[in-house]
Picture 1 (cartoon, rainbow, N blue to C red):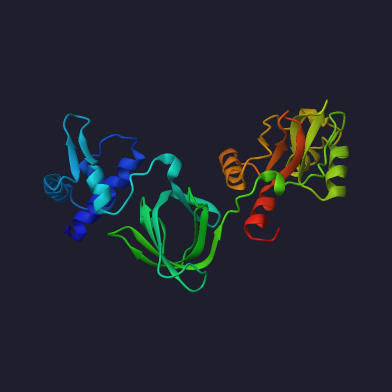
Picture 2: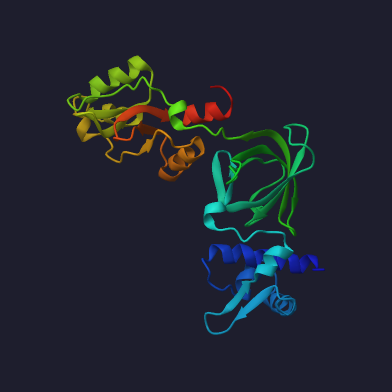
Length: 293
């Protein structure tokens, strides 16, 4: 049975090792993270090594690495980058935190159960009362929203009072996309494009030439151009050529991942011949998850 100090040291080692991309961690780094004396860390590391939880790496670049048994002892899966489950606060991902395990105190139902969240990373980035979103999980695409009502710094656990529990629908983007695709012509100027977006109450549209998408123009682009007195500028000089298209069979969860990775709010849905079929926005996807659509 590990002491609370040993658990905290082991958890800190795992957190630092995960960020180091495989490099060994020095005792001084752990001491700094925990605000403890380096000598105390070294003494405890001897005990952890004898238990087979820590491996010592000799040499000037040496230090410590957690063993697989360390992960098992702390009930953490040695998950790879693709399987990490993010935590969000106020719409932004919280540092390098990820979730290793979610356990519900009863049948998952928002407002009637709590969730124990096993976290990998520096849990002190979250405080009691913080409202967070966990997920989506890699298999079931589960998303859990709630308020932090408990925090165990030793075992790296959060206790969450759930307010919303959802699973991303297993549907393709073409089932959510707007098929009445509003497009812009390359010959248009900024003023013309502004009129089109305003009439259709949309925030962006693709520029189509010879049935192919050659660019994207957003309301933000137009606003900046008008503010600079460039309302007569051709939209081909203003449009973004970084076009992100997705195939019609792409699942909603994967589309969200594409948006997050590219930091965009809309995707052009294309057919097998790469011809545009429609457009799907972040709002479309969120509405589908929320059951509005």
